[in-house]
Length: 222
Ligand code: 5RP
Image (tube, rainbow, N blue to C red):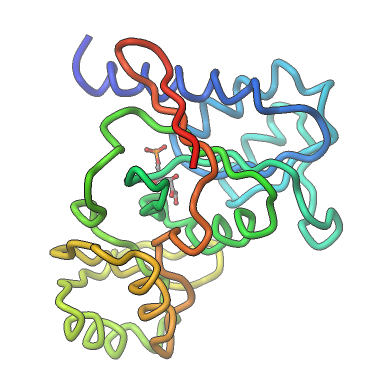
């Protein structure tokens, strides 16, 4: 098994372990390869749930293909559970998300949920956030302006060319940051005119982190 296959096995393990958090009702479902495994497992107990609120068009399509109803967050009200992956987590369960570009809807569903269960392989747990380039969703006309502001904060923003978010916006990926104060930086970047969302999830971190590991799933609780 090569290392990509091994990592995928660990993602699958975390996704399966998250099923024990599903108690019924409407489930918030995130985006990405780890969540794709979760959707496959969720399909095996679909009779137990009423449907899902999805954080992306891609996840919506997968959920529907499994016969799981996809519902509008405006119609469901608050959710009890949100399950999503992450690009990085620190030990306080503050995250970097948005590698798949779905950060804005992910942040909305996380905010509207009582419990956020994050699923990942163990390589995603890091001492300090920032080695993974931090995604920022921006309004197209603000791309250059926001990039200049991000340089002032010490980052190196790169436009994710050829990619448009589900909301019709662009993504800047910022490398070169060591995020020592995640809540402060989340607020600071969100305050730049033209930024829709920054992929730091610190003001609303995960409540539970399930990490797939060679020794089996590890659960960290905030
Ligand atoms: C998408 C995300 C994903 O959760 C994140 O990129 C992790 O993806 P994967 O499960 O494929 O490693 O934030 O916007």
